[in-house]
Amino acid sequence: MNIRITSVLCSALALLVASARADGTSVVVTPAFVNQYMFRGARLSGPSLEPSVEVDSGNFALGVWSNFPIKDKVPGQSDPEIDPYGSYTFTVNESVSIAPGFTWYNYPNADTNNGFFKSTFEPNIALNYTVAGLKLTPKLYYDLVLKGPTYEFTAAYAIPLKDLGSELDWIATAGTFKIDDAAKGASPSVKNWGDYYLFGVSLPFAITRESKLIVGFAYTKGSGNFLKAGSSPKVENTAAVGRGVVTLSYAYTF
Image (cartoon, rainbow, N blue to C red):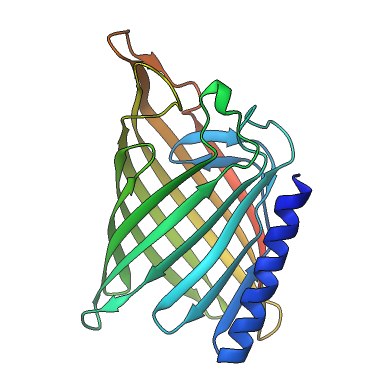
């Protein structure tokens, strides 16, 4: 773990919590553990710690998500990953909303000599439509550094479990992406494209009024994921695999 980056992150979180308390907004702090880190159908590391913090004020959300792999690390890239993000939701009516946002991906220990980027920036926009409790969300991302779009569609539905005082939160996601500059400094540039999907369910357990324990499982898989440099033949990305991901997290709201 990079001590300097961790110290900066802790300081930033402390400022966010203090600011939120002063303004009367809410802060959600969520330490989490996953048995492996998957991103858009690609396996980026094995067991990992994934702490996050989010400040919510009305329709505005600002947070920091991070990944600290415990083993099976991607050489030169994934230790750690620290991603500030934000969004603002514009409500159209009780069923429809539009949410522009961004994610700023940071890999402070990335080996740029081997084609890794230390930072990329990805604006996004989502359309949320809810009907009969089913939330449908088409979403468009565009990475300004990697130079390519990701198109994603998500469906989410919650089934109440009144006897347990909880609910089953189901989610399904399908996406496709095409990147024109996947390797830093490569000439000719390296293109990367592929598809992915995810099916998952999570079960929250209330511990106190302010806190809850969340257990989740998802199966996600990448397919048709290839890399291609110039006129060279395309090469299959071996990081694109199918895996089951177990998540255990604890969310505390200030």
